[in-house]
Image 1 (cartoon, rainbow, N blue to C red):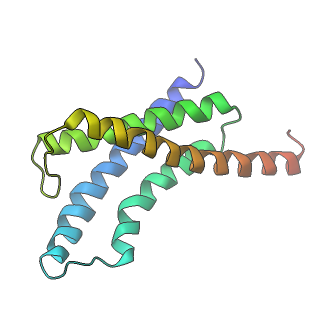
Image 2 (tube, rainbow, N blue to C red; image 1 turned 120 degrees about the vertical axis):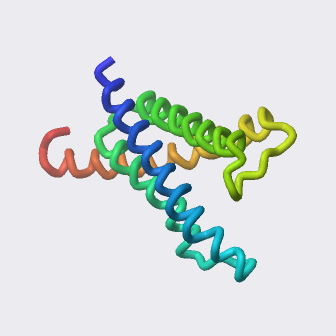
Length: 137
């Protein structure tokens, strides 16, 4: 139960990050660039992905158990997939509504959660090394 406020803060940070990624980077930078070229520069992809990875690295740095890593990754995957699902329902530019929303949600959520789990695990491992060096382990 002591983890829930931190998980809530991570969810709020993730939703804020996803909002900035979509409404600022995607709509204001990526979509206008696609009007001129079919290939986006790498930095645009990074600008849409790296901020959410930073959220999970910051969250994972203090985590110590595999269960908490899995919980954060699972909740993060569901939140991100749900956010993109809502964008499709709202007919946001660049988010074409597919005919089978459920299967797309079911396919992307585990993949996103695995990616988040990797970032969380690296962060937790980094935090553990630092705690061990400081004598707190």
